[in-house]
Image 1: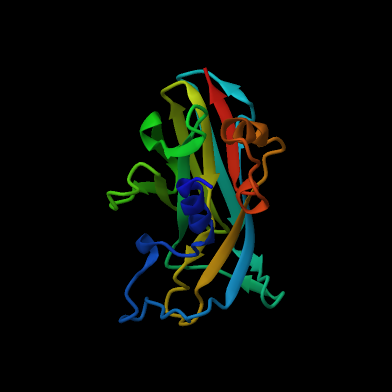
Image 2: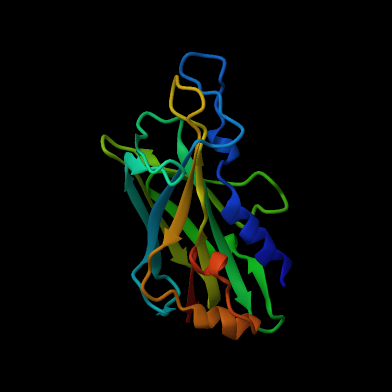
Length: 214
């Protein structure tokens, strides 16, 4: 299996990113537990939902979920307000049909923020892999909206990976993982199989959206 696919799967399992790690040495910090006490299910969507786009079109990634969530660990309602931040990463890949492999492709998009914020990894090995994202915390929800302007023809795959939070401000052992599912009705997974000659497995399929740019 392509090495980048394995890396993408590892990214799906990440429940915290460096941009979220704040100091626990002050009253507004939060000392995390080794095993996150909370795990929440959240969703996102890529739109407009099509299989074929044109160069210059824009695809939007939108995700929003309430602060009151049900933890999948305890089945209890949790008010996850006033966090140190909820964030994760969006992966950007091109499906190379000639070599039957996946390649990083952030440089094939112009990315802009509409709600929340995004930043590029400082790791030289994965700078072209995608964007780190941080959700905007409103009065009642966490919100993210990112635009991707398509710059070049090809087959592509965008992935919204699992999220994480260091915890709630001033409250230790409140770190959380957020299990992300992309809810697009048609994720065009046949393009993945066409390009690589094998289907996306369940772990990958729940979090990706494939499309063609002409």
